Image 1 (cartoon, rainbow, N blue to C red):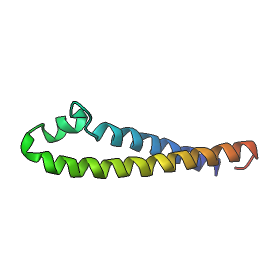
Image 2 (cartoon, rainbow, N blue to C red; image 1 turned 30 degrees about the horizontal axis):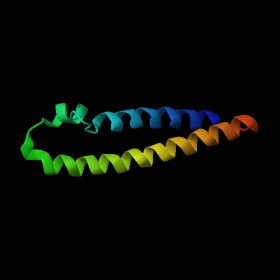
Image 3 (cartoon, rainbow, N blue to C red; image 1 turned 90 degrees about the vertical axis):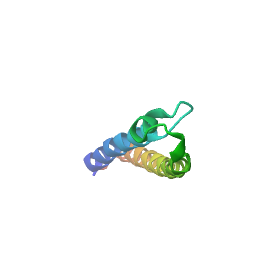
Image 4 (tube, rainbow, N blue to C red; image 1 turned 90 degrees about the horizontal axis):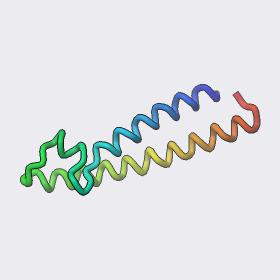
Length: 79
């Protein structure tokens, strides 16, 4: 069980890094490179940024919960 939680943590880590890199920041970030930095897609980019922000929060919460579960299992010698 501990091994499965560690694998889940690695997967969540990669997903979290990917989603954060896809968000546009002050200088359009990596999503500006992928989508192009044309001003005509500004509305679409804002919608995508809103979606990516929600996904980031969700993955971050899951990351935190899995980390706590791993700590609990380690302390109580489970798995």
